[in-house]
Length: 388
Image (tube, rainbow, N blue to C red):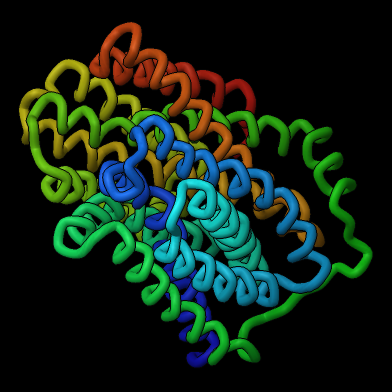
C-alpha cells in the first residue's frame, strides 16, 4: 500500500519534470531572439516568426493528441512525445537559416503539445477525485516553474555560450524525463478506449453546459492571467531597466508561488470548497495586476505582485483543471486537451490583444485593463459555474 502511494508521487514528479521542460522551452525563445537575429543577420521582426511557428502547432495538436491518448494509451503517447520532443529540440541547435529553424520549432511544438494535457488526463486516471486537485496543483506548479525560470535560463546560457547552446541544454535536460519514462514504462497505468474517435468527444463536451461554461472561464483565465504574465518582463525592463538575468529572477516568483500554491490548493479546497478557491484565485490575480498599475514602480510591490499572480493562477487553473477531469472519464484525454487548447488559445489571444493595448496606450495600461477583466471573469464565474 505504501509503495503504491510512493508510485503516485513519483508519477507526479516525473510528469512535472516533463511539463517543466516543455513550458520552459515554450518561453525560452523570447530572450534569445536578438541573438538569433544577429547570428542569421535578419531583422528581429522576421525572427519573431519562430514564436508563431511553435505556438500554432502547439495549439492545434493538443486537440489531436487527446483522442489518440484515449485510444492508444496515455503513457504511450507521453513517452513517444517526450522522446520526439528531445530530438526536435536538439535539432534546433543545427538551424542555419530562418526557414529550417521555423520547421524545427514547428516540430518541437507538435510533440510538446501532448505532454501537459495528456499528463493531466493520466493524473485523472491515477488519483481519486478527493486527491486530484492537490495532485494537479503540484504538477502544474512544477510545470509552470519552467515558465518563471525560462527567461533567466535562456538569457544566462545565451550570454555565456550562444543561442544554440540553449537548445542543446534543453535537449539534454529533456533526456531526464525521457529516460525516466522508459525506465518506469511498465509501472505506469494505461487505460484505453478502443471505440474512441477524434470528433465525437469534443462535440459532447461543448454541447453540455457544465463543461462548456468551464471552458469559457478557462479561455478568460488564459487571456488575462497569461496575457498579464507575458508582458511583466517587458514592464520590468522598461520601468526598472534590469537585465534578462534579474528579470528572470523576479519572474521566478510566479513559478515558485505556483509550486507552493499547487501544494496548498488541494488542502484549501477540502476546507473551503472548490468554488471559493476559484474565486480567491481570480481576486488575487486581479489584485496583482492592479498593484502593478498603481505601484509597480516600487520594486518590492512589484515582486509581491508577481508572486500574487502566480498564486492566483494556480488556485484558479488547478480548480478548473480538476473540474474538467470529471467531464468524460472514458475520453479524459480529449477533455483535458480541450482545456489546454482553450487555455493556450486564450493566452495567445490575450498576448495579441495586449500588444495592441501597449501600442495604443502604453504597457502600464495593460495591467489595469486585464485586472478589471479578471474581476469581470470573477463575476462571470458566479453565474456560469455556481455548483462548484
